[in-house]
Length: 85
Image (cartoon, rainbow, N blue to C red):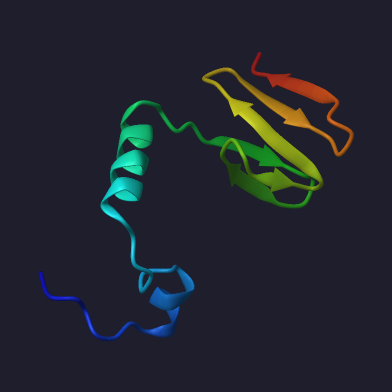
């Protein structure tokens, strides 16, 4: 398979020019296939954010996102669960 010769700056910023091993590709594919990625809609009072588990917003790490709740952790690791009513 021929390798693409040039990438624009936006593609390089995304890492599209980086080589990836077959094993890394398959590991990521299996991980994605084995789980459902849920997105939560949160507001910090000024801005609405779409977040997934592992991301950070306003100093809080998003620990888990389920169909009816979001678990946040502060810098000390104290967890807070936000639930839909």
